[in-house]
Length: 81
Image (cartoon, rainbow, N blue to C red; front, side, top):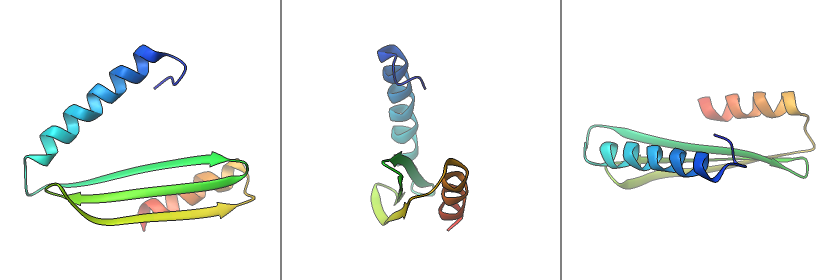
């Protein structure tokens, strides 16, 4: 998604809404929603795990003073966890 384009953001959000609506109707599916950002040399990874519209767990991980390649490894590590 291109954050500078409002149309791209709207299209992306519409697709995400459709996916979540579809998944929330099936009690046998698990949703894992993850977002990672880097701001002022601090990487933050947030994950939400939902089962049939109920939050099971929310995880927040932080790492300070890391380079871009370390941030990628950080995301992979906590994504696996």
